[in-house]
Length: 141
Image 1 (tube, rainbow, N blue to C red):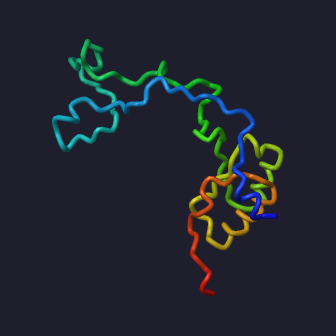
Image 2: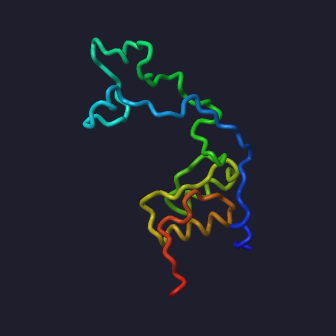
Image 3: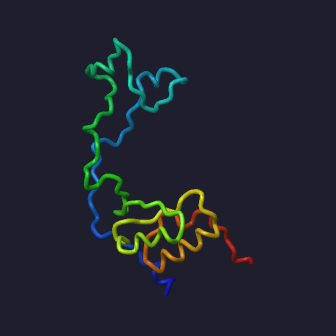
């Protein structure tokens, strides 16, 4: 019956509508002007800087008001919160929370251990966000 659980997508308990206050990235002042400045945000520190002084028509600066709603913060678009799992034992923490949290297998986990984690996740009907990572096709063996 493990093939049946793969086909049926696991649904979250409640699917909240995620509303972001701003989806555009905050770009660094004058990063469009110089190639040596990456567009990653850095706070301007200059005494005369017009972005820091919040002049009209300048880049907006990130501040606490752009924070996400507490109900939907860290919520993935599929309606689950991520929980990083490093072994099978950590997966069993999600036993009662399988409709709210999905497991994400940590980066450093070997492909052998990944198989065991994915198999156990199917038994506990826990959604795994990255089940195909480090997957080698072993039909030829």
